[in-house]
Structure formats: C-alpha cells, structure tokens
Length: 409
Image (cartoon, rainbow, N blue to C red):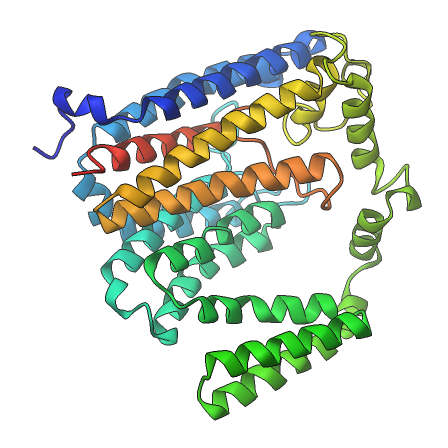
C-alpha cells in the first residue's frame, strides 16, 4: 500500500508536470541556438549535454515517484549525512579553476556534490521540523535546525560557492515559519544582517535601531534577553566598517560595481553590462532564433547557464522572459497549494522548502541578469545547462509529485 498505485495517479499534479515540460523544452530550444557554433564532443556542447542528462533526470523523478513515502522520511537523516560527506570529497581531489566544487568520478564529466547536498539537507530539515512541531514556539528549538543547515552551507562556502550556499539557506526561514516558529524569532535571525547593512549610513542605522527597539518592546522578551538583543545588534553594526576593510580589493570592487556598473565596464561590471545589452537589443519580440549578435559573437559570458535569460531576451524578446516567469509563477503556486492542503506535516513542510529553493534560484538568476544584484553564478531551473543541476531539479520534482499524491486525504 505504500507504493503508488494506478488509482493514485489521478492525484499527481498534472499542472506541475506541464510547467516543467514547457520550461525544459524552452531551455532546449535556447541551448540549441547557443550550441550552433560549438565544436567538440557531447559534453562540450550545451545542447547535447543537456539532452544526455535529461534522460536519467526524468528516470530519477519517476523512481522517486514510486518510492514509499515513509522511506523518504525514514532515511532523511542518512541522506543528510551522505550530503555532508559528498561536499567534503572535492577537497581531497584537485581544484578546478581554483575551487573545490567538482568531483571527478572517472567519467567524461564531473559532478557538483553541493547540488545534491542542498536537496538532502532540505529533506532532513523537513523531518526535524515535522517531528518537533509541538516545540516550535521555543527559541531554543529553532537553533538546531539552523545549525543543521549551516554545517553543509559552511563547507560549500569554503569551496568557495557563495551562490549555492545562499540557496541552501534560502528555505530555512519559510520552513521554520510554516512549522510554527514565532515570527519574532525569525526576525531575530535576520537582525544581524540588517544591522550590518545599515551601519554604513548614519540615518539608516538610527532608523533601524528605533525599529529594532520597538520590535523588541512589542515582543516583550525577558529583560536580560531584550538588552542583549538590542545592544548586541548595535555592536555588530559598529563592527561592519571593520569587516568591510577586511575584504580584499577584488571583493570590494564587486560590491561597488554592483552599485555603479559604469565604474568598471571592462572588469567586474562586464557581465552585467553585456547581459543588459542583450536583453535590451531583443526588444519586445526578439531578433529571431539563432540571430542574437551578443550571443553568437560571444560578447555575452556564461550564456548557456548563468545568463541564459539574456539569450532568450535577445532572440525571443522580453515577451518570452515574461511567459517563462509566468509559467514558473504558476508552477510555484501549485506547489504551495499542495503544501497548504497537505495533512501530512512532513510533506507540507518539505513542499514549502522545495518551493522556496526554486523561488530563490529564479529570483537570484533573474535579478542578476538585469543587474539588480551582484553576479552569483546561479542557473535558472530546467532552462540553464548543467548536468548536476538538472538532475537535482528533477529529483526535487519527483519528491514534489510524490509528496503531493493524496495530499487532501
């Protein structure tokens, strides 16, 4: 009875499947255009490489769909342990481009373990929150799940891979909130970040100190805790200029260029400027498939992955980006709907986590493409090229479909 039966197939969310199919096909169309002038074998061509990984990706999602739900819950912590181990393994090999993100396993391609670790970590977090839901009102209860996610995140940061580390942390607050944690406690998790960001402007820092003080007063924590929270955050804010000066010139340049891209048009801002140029030159309906000059003259960097939306905008116009984002919005809504209606707490929290991960990827990639945030090197789900990323996207789809089956029973 634990395996999915034919009678249960009616509960599989078809709208999610159609959305994934549309996004995947759209990605293949764009990658085919990018690959026109690529030479080399299967794994040097973004289109053929994506097709190669698409087959095992779909098979993995089907395999997960027929896996008993209790098995996923039972082995959540074991998968988490495997995730931590595999993100450590690249450190025992040779670096790629000065990083330890990739793991060579004797195949023509390398594996990025952090992609799989983020899925395993999410499942373990969902299990913990579902098992201890009655204690979520206590602040001490939310510390362990944060540490649970921080362990693989810190390892990934050391690789270094800031983009993936951000994605690993992205579902923590939504999942904690969905599990019943007090909003004030979640606010406390974010206060050090706000204290650091506002510290460089005296008026902003003053306003933030007032907001923080009012929030603490309204929440009415114990007096000692209130004093520690307020003055601790003020102290963190005052340390921010020192932390800024500790950054390398290159790191400071990336942040300053983000604020003013024209500051270094041939250096750190080159990618953002070329991306904006590609999207702008495409207009509303684009130049046509295979006609993108920014793309095919190689002005646009990392076009098959990080900046694939720029290629889409140049060749198919702004309307194509709008359609993709709308389809993705409907895709996320369907996941959230099933999370809301699910009577199984583990499934509900896990679905919220998967929605958060996909939303974080889309937000960061889209914002990066148009210069709203610094370049982070994160792909767009189902559209960008990337073997490990495509596999994990379909693993998450398999889990979403599995945890959505009979969600209303």
